[in-house]
Amino acid sequence: MGIREELLVCMLGVLAVLAAAYGIPRIYGVLRRPEGDGAPLVLVRGIRAFIVSAAFSSIAIGRLTDSEGFFWFGVFFLAEELYETGVMLLILRWGRSRGFV
Image 1 (cartoon, helix red, strand yellow):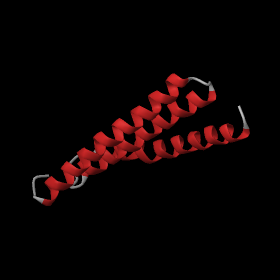
Image 2 (cartoon, rainbow, N blue to C red):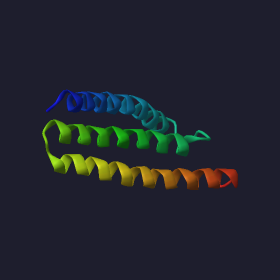
Image 3 (cartoon, rainbow, N blue to C red):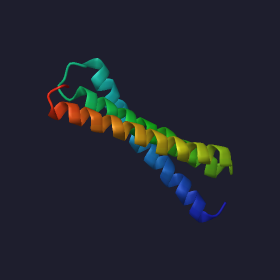
Image 4 (tube, one colour):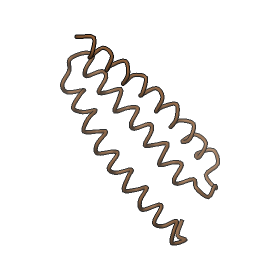
């Protein structure tokens, strides 16, 4: 493993920790007090950050161990979950603008 791959793995690890540090408090806060106005949006953003953290961790593990399975799982998991949560955010914002949420 070259220096560039080691730097990539380190950066992915740091980004995974930062994403988890951003997402977990939001998820916990909404689950503690779910009656807030923007609670669904905050919950989805927290889940999205946690998913990014898990995917970055999987990609980093894949690069670190030269495991293509972990690497590609992380890539496809990240893409699919970002698509899903993006659509969910669009639906929640649309509903909120119409007074449904």
